[in-house]
Length: 180
Image (cartoon, rainbow, N blue to C red):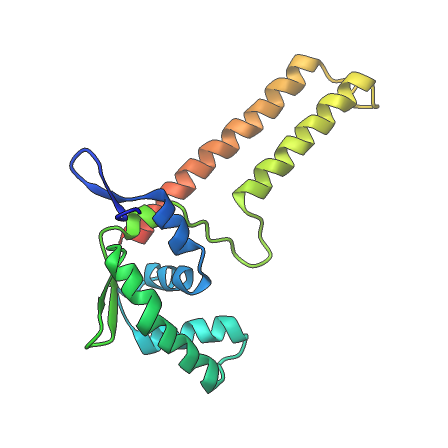
């Protein structure tokens, strides 16, 4: 059984299995998203209100949903996140703040706004576009058949490289924002 922490050079990091276990649960993921949005300290009541709103789609959320979320956060999710060093949960004060291992989890969280596509979907689409363009060039589709093959390849690899560069910069700024 995993202890949840691996020894690095001089730092302790969470085991990948523990990170995936944490992120597998929507409520734990929502806690981490909420803690990364700004306020350093959140109360369990505030977190329950936010999560219940997301789950029910209502603002304010129904009382029974809010209570259910509150109980599950207090009894299950926050103690688990605290044990892994992702949050510091003061059960007596009912307060939560991010902890040292939150940064390990942040790297795995890709928050995709509503009606947007994830980076995985973007790269898949880019790959399909490149494949269709290459096949179109080989079979002589008008316009694509007239384009120089190496020029088409340079264009496609340039788009891929620029996209990956932007993704790296964007992810670094997200991680830095999560740390602040």
